[in-house]
Image (cartoon, rainbow, N blue to C red; front, side, top):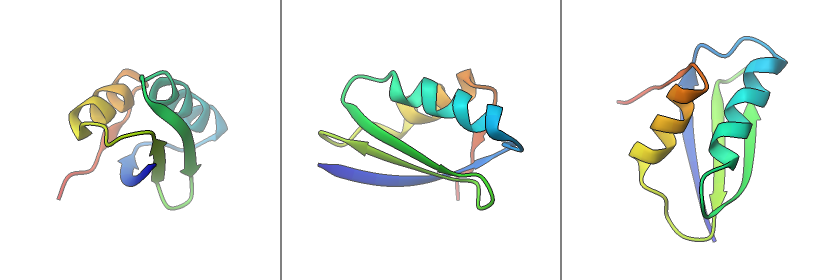
Length: 69
């Protein structure tokens, strides 16, 4: 089991949270997605590590951006 947290910008409401959870949750291997709207944090649980680019692409598909350092 792997847990990784990403910072996502642009989320402002419950619909945003649902969209991000749906897109990331649809990726193969993802077992859970938690979103902290106030902090802009998305925690992804998966069976094995998932390439960050795949997570970023799913977030972009939902209409938001992953913050990179």
